[in-house]
Length: 439
Image 1 (cartoon, rainbow, N blue to C red):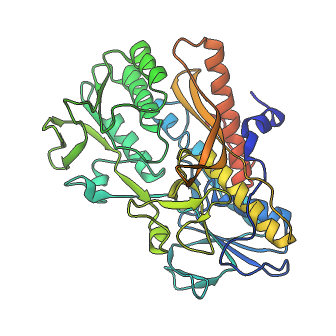
Image 2: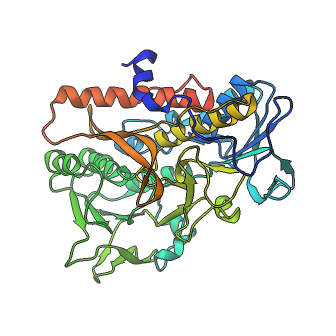
């Protein structure tokens, strides 16, 4: 296993840093009694809250979170392969509360940027001096005919961890040996670009060990995908005859356009029709609804940001971090959300201190489990820059796992990923009780 010192190397450029004056459109912050409201208590929002309250205990920090218990999406695919228990993915918010952070279990229903307040579904209204939106994703159900929130109870997406994760696992366990599992994958962008293919490996591992007559059919709206070479090598090495990968090309469009939960049938844009015993529909995605309601989203449903500090490019006085943000060149992952959160926390702290923030540096690494002790990764550092006159995050020193790597390299990747999981839970939730990969 990797110790804390080694983990510091993994986080790299995600150290406290920022790169702009105090948030545009917001009044100056005074140390005494300043109010920071954070919508979403995951890898991004929790990180902001923990750092702010640790560094400036007098700050009034409130986290609004719909769920009383945090269930991590990252590493949730391991549950399908039997490499994690469901309980090991669940974590309390008590660590944040112990720091004096007010964690409110409710839904942010509306934001009044004029009055600088957040209205909750339960009826309360919270004023703020700084607002951080980290609401994650929502789904464009209507992008697929026949799909809906109700249909997801039959054809689960499991792209928000929790009850949907358990539902998909129960369906896999209940399926007859010889049944077909169908997974539909959307076009970019979406949460965790390599996620569907790690999930494919984990489901295939379950089928190989428990239902060897079954297979998994992937219908993908894209011609290429993240870490493709290493994933395809794993499909052949570990799961030949189990995984049937169908990528969109100039002849066939495997984008799923219609589903029928009653018959468990899916139809692609090319007219291919398939029936599955289990159908995992990963829908087209969008920023969390509260970010859209606040006016932070573009027509595509994602929130453009200023790369120097992740303040909204559309609404002054708001930060948008994590999966809801569209940070060109930087993918949506828990690692990046944590990295965004550190920069935002530093920006707020700089405003409190009346000083100049440091230059923002971001980092991403994403690990994907292929089989026992075999993990691959991708990542890069990112700095604010420009492309065609537009602000972007420029990748530096990108890396990606290759085909043919040694078992030792892959085992080390696996150990890194486990160490990162434990450390990010501590970093975002002030929770040092993250369970082992077997729970």
